[in-house]
Length: 342
Ligand code: NAI
Image (cartoon, rainbow, N blue to C red; front, side, top):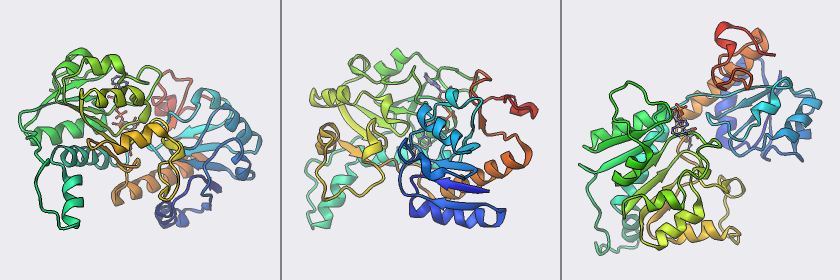
């Protein structure tokens, strides 16, 4: 079984070689991202393994299909970059539903603490023996209200962490559960929250859910956290909100146009994306480069689940982590009955 890996980094190679070598899989690692021009590299491979910024649209799927690829194995939870509907009937798609929700939730809290206690400023100052505290006044999280959008695996862990800090937690989810959390309308969450953290997937419904209108309805000084997907936020509207002093701070691990810049060393290059450059220039904006997942535990779990997905799919023909357009809800395929839709 030969698997073509796209957008591979050293840490991917290390974790996959450690757990795939013994399972009869051969890995071909490509640094380039998957797109229409690079799909031909997968010729003769049984599967491709892709990450969040690989392009897996209809044209790419057709090329992979023509090359004999039978499986697209996402080494991520999110699959908004894959045209699952177009893949139906051609190529099966599997993903890693959870590898370490703690990694992402803890990163969100790390960003929040960094921002509200000005750790990023203090770190740079003391490196230069500047021990002044001027401009470093933060605020207590205790008794502040945090609004969590999306109470899935990551969102729920984040709410637990926030409760540990003595915060009041409000939750908005498309499908509220009977789990003791305080579910409210999006309107109420916007108007009452001092901190808003995004943990829902990117879908047509959630694209730009944080836009000018939503920002208008938020509290002055609100801190926005996005460790989910960049396009949940309309970045132009965010910049306007920051310039208008409406947004108190923004912590972004993801950015709508991140595919061309994140994960690479761009120091020494001219930054073409004016919007990103302007956001990064703001004293109250912290950007990390889609790093929330990056812990040793998460990398190990990603590699193990992906290898299991591939081996199980080719051995048994079904895989519990298959994404299936036919079944209505993409993640709940007939696989549970060990049947296959195509
Ligand atoms: P999950 O599937 O467990 O939870 C998502 C929650 O969002 C569910 O409760 C769902 O009902 C809710 N939801 C769906 N549509 C909604 C809507 N329109 N409005 C409000 N809520 C809605 O997913 P999980 O594992 O918690 O991951 C959340 C997101 O985190 C992923 O979709 C992915 O985009 C992102 N992520 C980011 C990573 C990073 O490194 N920055 C790593 C892993 C995931």
